[in-house]
Every structure is written in C-alpha cells, then in structure tokens.
Length: 452
Image (cartoon, rainbow, N blue to C red):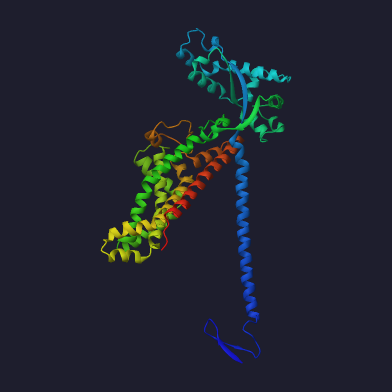
C-alpha cells in the first residue's frame, strides 16, 4: 500500500500493484463529462454558424435583385413642333413644356419598338405605356432641359420599366397574379417577352439604386438609397465629433483623476445603466429636448446625430475606461518616478497605450449607432421621403433627410413588393458599411497596438 498526495491535498491510497496511470471509474466519468461538454459546445457553435449562414444567404438572395433593373431602349423623337412650337429655340420655352407634353412622344417611340418585334397585340399605345415607369416623361424632360439642342432629333434612351414589368422578369410577378392587377395584364407580358427577345428590353446593374433618391409609392423602380446614405454620413459625423472627445475626456477623468467617493460611484452606476437603456427611450428624449424644447428642425440629421450621441456615449465611456485600466500600473509609476506630473503620465504614456482599445470601442459604438432605427422613428426621419441631395454642410445637417435604417424600415412597410425587394438590398448596403467599420476597428487596433 502506498499513499500519495493529490492536487487537492488529500491522501489517496493505492492498492497493491495499482499504477498511477490506471484510469479508475471516477476518472472515466469525469473524462466522459468533459467529452460531452466539448460536444455540446461544438453543437452550439454549429447551430450558430448554420443560422448565420441561413441569415446571410437569405439577405443576399432576396437583396441582390434590387441592384438590377429592367430597362427599355427607345428611340424617342423629340419633335420640335411639340417641344418648341414657335421654332425660336429659346431654352426658356423648351423648359416650359410640362411632362404630359412628352407623353405622346413616348407613346410613339414605344409603339414603334413594339412594331419592330412583329408581335401582334390589341393593346393601344396609351395602355402600352403602363409597361414603363411613370417617371419616364420627367426623366426625358430633365435631359432635354439640360441639352436643349436635342430638340428636333431622335434620341436613343434607356428608360426604366415599371415595377410590375421588372417583377415579371425577376419572378416576383406571375401571369396568374396579373389577372387581378389593374396596372398590367398578361397581354403586356407577351409584348415584354417579344421585346426581350428582340434586345429592346434588358436587365443590368442599376447604379441609381446605390446613388439615387427615394421615390413615391407609385414609382418603386426609381427608388434608391443614395440620399439616405448621405443622411447617415452627416449623422455619423455629428456622433463622431461629439461623442469621441466627450467620451474620452469623461473616461480619463473618472479613471485617472476623479476621487473615489459616493458621487463618482453614483456616476459610474448611472453610466452603466444608460448603456442598457432601450434606444427608443433616447428617441423620446431627443424628441422632447431637441425638437420640442430647443426647436431644432424635425427629420434633420443634426437631431439624429445628437440623439445617437447620447446613446453612444455610455458605450464609448465604458470601453475607454476598460482600455485605460488595461494599461499596467507600472507605466504610471515609472512616469511619476522620473518626475512627470499626473497629467503628463496620463497623456504621454497611458493614453497612447490605451489608444487601440479607445479607437476600437469608438468605431464599434459608431457602428451600433449606424444601425439604429428606433430613435429615428421618434424624430420623424421615417415619414420623410429622401428625394433631394443636400447642397452643402449646413443643408446636410439641418435639412430634412432620412438614414439607411429608417429608409429600409420605410420600404419594408410599403405595399408594393418591389419596395420589399429594395429593403433587402438596403440591408446589404448597411451590412457592407458595418463590415467596413469593423474592419477599420481591427486594422486600427493592430496598427496602434503595443505589447509590454
């Protein structure tokens, strides 16, 4: 019989001839429990990865069609007797022609295009126009106003097809569903098929979705997320300018200079509580404080940026304080030992070492603010149609606009299925922005990281 001391300090008695390497019953049970725990962990990770893949595949499959659009190539005769009846060539006279003045020219061009295909149809020219976007006349009018010398010529122009026609080529609209639709009929689809075979109708990438503006509910094919991206940019600019210096300054004071008493403990508890407050509460606060009390314009990116700043500050303060705590106390002691003041030790030694964590926390906070929708609901950015680009910094901050999350929410609640498709496309754009911001955070951390 031989005794030996286990890791827990207890004396374990071995039987004669028994080896320490022999696996007994209790050890087998412990090893089995550890094996089961590893299996449970792998199962949990596998389920999470499968759900993530399903989510990403769903977003991509449903959102990619939003980046393509159906176009119709038309030879539009810009007749001088219609657009310039006096024959003076005066640009002011040409600009005075309203959009309905271009309607006969579009009908003529579309009728000629259908005739080229050789398809026989009983649909008249006025009904054929339903295959095109209702904004085609305005688009051609804008082009003529920019170039009045086009009057009198026949110009080949690619115009947008209607959302129903676009949905037919993308599988969103079927002949059965069009039997109950007043905008398009199955006979129109025969014409569209013939025009596609003739090369008059084509589907290709639509840059207007990325850089364009929102449109009314009757023109989903013209809707774009570009102006909402500009609104998000101005909001993030306000958040960055305000939250970074305020959050870092507050963190440095609380961590390095503030005395440890009940008052600072109360501040720390409130900061932690604010980080857990639902974002819609900050929206109510912004509505009451910035719009109703301060009188700032509703739906303005400045107001949205101020609200998101309040929401982001607790996150930045907590991450910055954690970065400051991670700096070894020996750095502070060494700086103070060679004669540096408290402020010099903090700003010359501690802060540079904590900078990777501070930048990472700030960018993650900005990424969180970029995807918030609830605060924007309360300040009116959802009900506004972002149709105009701001001309400068002041207009970009103070003029009504939307943001990417608010624009996605607005599209998702509209009735036309084409807007639902664009909502998925907007999610892809938003995810790309969030992915880029997180990659920047990783690169900044590696760039400024110092090891000790």
